[in-house]
Image (cartoon, rainbow over all chains, first blue to last red; front, side, top):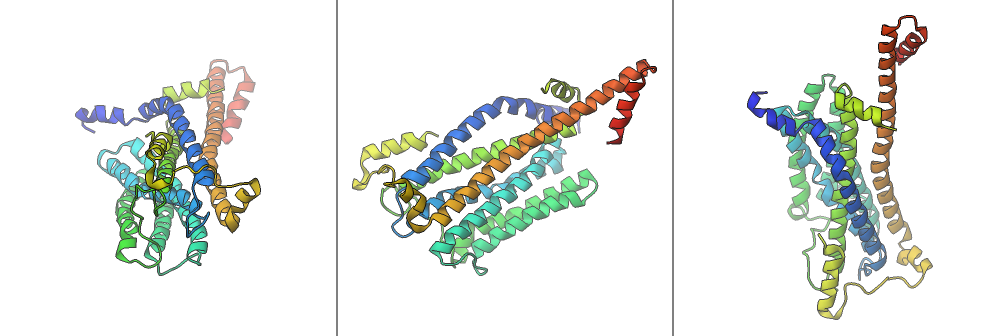
Length: 251
Length: 104
């Protein structure tokens, strides 16, 4: 907490974050709505049926976007956790704390959509011997672990540090998820190389639609995480003068 | 990132491989759209879950925000009432309000 770091603390202050996001939110929400609409309409109506998967390829646009984005939670929480551990920045811990439940939602949706797709294409809903499936399930349990660790430790600062450590260690699993399909190729296919040729497997008619959906899902992650973090700010900082003024102005 | 529609248009204009990126809407009727080539359950359950996921993670934080602001506002009103009654101890109604608020 040396004097020279004060600017850094001010930069990461809850008030600074709240004021900035008040200005960013309308743009983020607008962009999210646009990309989501384009992505969903494209995937449901315009995507040509796959020659093997038929119309179930429409599932993959959602599945790939949500699954890819779900891998960003542990790195995000690890970075926020490192900031918490080194600089004890309150804001970083608030972000990390609110990221965990959202990450659990993302991971659950990945597992559910993958299972629903697999029941057609693989003829099975679940396969315990597949490394991608099991490592993804492990990420779900790890996130539940982070959430329950937070509530299990009484002292807020100790809880924040323990969660930060678990988040950093949890990044190992992200690497395992990412390369599982290459290291142990059992059931889940490796990611298809992007092709520029329309009509080929993973041609632009598929991957551009998926890219749009990935942007949409990342924007959604940002919007949702900003909303929950702002809630925590007005709750935790309720004694600050600027929050009192905000409360007084509300309706 | 304008790749959404702009990029797609550019690729179409290039006329790649004789096929176009947009062959228009892939269904000839509404019932065909709902049927999804026999995979209605799989496709629609995924999109239903996706919709729940999106709506829940936007609506719940917004709802919580309303509740927090309402609760804080009540708390501030109680504090204000306490200040007022401290200045005017004769006003017993103010005390009752603050005591009720303290109970929670």
